[in-house]
Length: 188
Ligand SMILES: [Zn+2]
Ligand SMILES: [Zn+2]
Image (cartoon, rainbow, N blue to C red; front, side, top):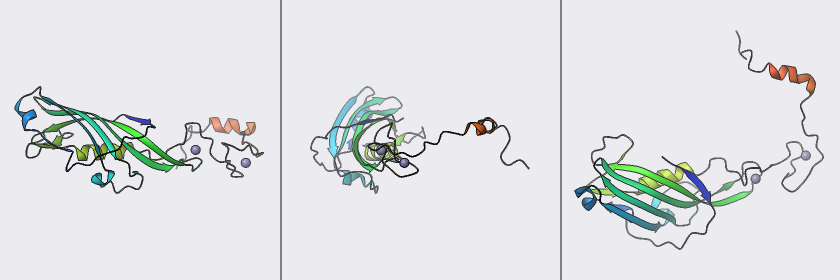
């Protein structure tokens, strides 16, 4: 399950570790109730996103692992920076996003949604990678009420007021508008 929120913060300087997202799960698997907290910053390169929207700023990961009888529950957040353009006014955007992570890891997965514990190790990287890629907005906006460009003259309506006729619908057509959807478009 993913919940996405956009936050604009400057990320702290990251440090790289060898395979920092592979967690030894032997202790966790031995006793249900055992917990482990992980807080790391990882280079974007380590994720091999192959996605031009991911900006080269370290990814922050903060997760809490808890051993349950059914597997190991991993919950926390991952933050990364993406870039794009506003879909209405084409302004360049760079934003820090934070994704909530909430996943199960299982040995010999019996829940199809769970990640697998292999060789008593938990690899958090695919989970974080997937969560972040799903969270990058496909058609971002610089702000919710971005007015974009005038469809007639192309003026940027955020800082210009053009004199184009705003297309108020002709009242004579409103009766027809009301019939929209009443008849199938492709009646035989
Ligand atoms: Zn915009
Ligand atoms: Zn205009």
